[in-house]
Each structure stands twice: as C-alpha cells, then as structure tokens.
Image (cartoon, rainbow, N blue to C red):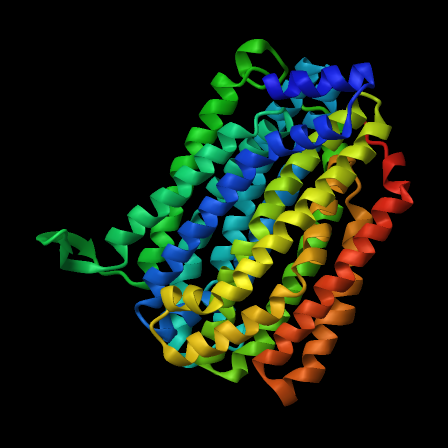
Length: 470
C-alpha cells in the first residue's frame, strides 16, 4: 500500500516536518472522515424515513439503540485485539506474521459474532420491558432488535476485515465500502419501510412497490446492507489486499500467543465499551419515563449530533494506524508527534462542525421528524451539546492513539470515572428538575471531563511504554 510505504520511509529516516506530518494524518483521515460524514447523511435519511411515521416509530428504535451500541462496541473490541497486532507487525515489516494474525482473527471473531447473535436473540422479547419502554412501543422494539441480532455475525466480520485493512494502511477501501453500506441501507429501507405508493418525480408519477413493514423494514434494510458489505469487505481483504491477501502466504495454525495478546487488548476495550454503553442504557432508562416525545427527541438528537463527532472518529482511525505502525517500527517519538497532530486536527474540525450544528439544529430536526414537539425539544438539547464538542474531539482522537499503542485498560478506567461518576450521577440529580434538559447538560459536562482526563493521559506519556507481544 502506498500509504504504508510512505509512513515507514519517514519513520526510518527520522526526518519528518510538522507540515509533512499534518499532511500524512490528513491523507489517512480524509477517506475515513468522508465515510463517516456520508454515514451521518445516510443516518439522517434513515432516521427521517422512520421519523415520518411519527414519534412512536422513532421511540421504538431509540429505546433499544443504546443496547445495539453496546453490541457493536463488543464487535469493535474483538476486532481491535487483532487489528492492533496487524498494525504493529506491518510497522515492523513482518507482513507474513500480519497475515497469520488476520487469518486467526477471522476464525475467532466469526465464532464471537455467532455467540453475540444467540445472546441478543435470547433477550430480544424482554429487553424493551427491562428498559422501561412504554407499552405502545415495546412490540416494535422487540421485532427491530431481533432482526438486528441476526445481522451481528455480519457486523463482526465487517468490523474485523475493515479494521485490519485500515491498520495495514488501506484506509480508502473500508471507507468506500462503508459509504456503499449506508447507500444500500437507504435503498433497502425505501422498499421495506413503506407500502406500495405513487411517487412524483419531475412531474411524472410512478408506482413504487413496497413491503410496508415500518420499523421492522428499517431493521431488515440495515441487516441486508450489513451482510452485503461484510461479504465485499472480506473479499477485498482476502483476495485483493497488497498485505493481507491469502495468496501472499501466512498460516492458519492457531497461535496461543496471538490469542492471548488479542484478549489482553480486546478485554479492556470491551470493558470500556461496556462501561460506556451500560451507562447509555441507564440514561435511556432515565429518559424513558419522561414520555414518548422525550424518548424520540433524545434518540433523534443523538443521530443529529453524529454530524459533529463522526469526523473525529475518522481522524481517530488514522491515529490508530499511524501510532500502531510507528511503535511497530520502534519510533515512539514519532508516535507521540502523530498523536499531537491528530488531536489538533480533530479538535479543529469538530469545533467547526459544532458551530454548524448549533446554527443548523432547527433545520436538522425539521428533516428528521414531523412532530413539532419533538423538533422544539430536540433543537434545544442539541444546542447544549455543541459546547462540549471540542473536548469530546480530544477524547475521541486520544482513544484511537491509545488503541494503536495497545493501551486499552486505562481508557476503560477513565470512562468508568467520567460516565458513572459524572454523567449518570448528574443526570439523576438534574432530571427531576429539568427533565430531558438535565440529561443533556450532564452529558455535556461529562464529555468535557472525559476530554481533560484523556489529554492528561496522553501528555504524561506512560502509554508510550506499553508493550504487546507480537
């Protein structure tokens, strides 16, 4: 991969200017940022499709959304344990070992994806009731979550193929395929959500056939898109990648050291995601008694906010690759410089998008829902969140850098402190007086605290001393 070669050349020479470093971070970030922005646009369209059916439909999906984040986070954690090894092996120019790790990752993560699907299917009839959902939304929530569960093996394989491609230096292919997944999701939803209807286009009328499945159709459309892109992502990684493709060699022999290293990285990362998402689930339980309008506004505001923070996740992906390969090549000094550069870019970009989000909040909600009450409430809480985005950006990018170094335990501890010590505690205190506003004020305060904690971790430098056995 050209990106990988350039990174290694600069690390070998040791002569890399700040300007060149910014260019390298930007070049790796742009495909991921583009994919994230496209994903957000598609999420908006997706949410507006469901939102057009009213607050009940939005609330039925929003009720279980935090649980789907938890399961997605576990898939990402499982992939991280192997992809970080790939990044450091590529940085050390041990490409054959990187391919062996990739092969083993496919076996282990496929089994894990099936396990998650079985668990999710088992709890799907009870989950909406556990979360305190209103009786009128629980049935749709259950059906939505059951279909989501069936797609979890595809989600896991897509994550492992995409993350290992990124860590090998190929940011472009996963980004393009993730954009395709978003587009497919919207196309499938167009047919599955709505019934057969007449559509006007430039003065011409067409009969468009549809299945009229509503909330279930939204879940089915997403599941089919996930399976399609998982297949394509695996095809590229297995047959087309310059580094990972099976034709270049590698071994299927199970290596205990590889699995132990993956677990040492993945388990703390899973712990981190569990902390975050159980806190989100707890927040959902706090919001649920506030009524259908509050649940819908909360869910749609989270979707709207993703416009602001998704570019940060693109830069975070680039920092994982750059830091992982730098450490693999024995250049921890450059890993630290790449991290500082990525943090600067992430904070700059998300500060700009926060301004856009604050100004454009009414237009966002006008697009997302037809309910006037949801629009007013959602606009207000989204504007509260805008003030926390710069420090939120710092935490997102720092997480990517720490992940590239294999430092996944301390971030979990920091998230435990910020999420449960600040967000949930403050939400419980404020909600009786401020309702949903209290939840989002608590969220904004917590994001600022989290960003500060991560910056302290980064600039103390102890994470650079982390060693993983590859």
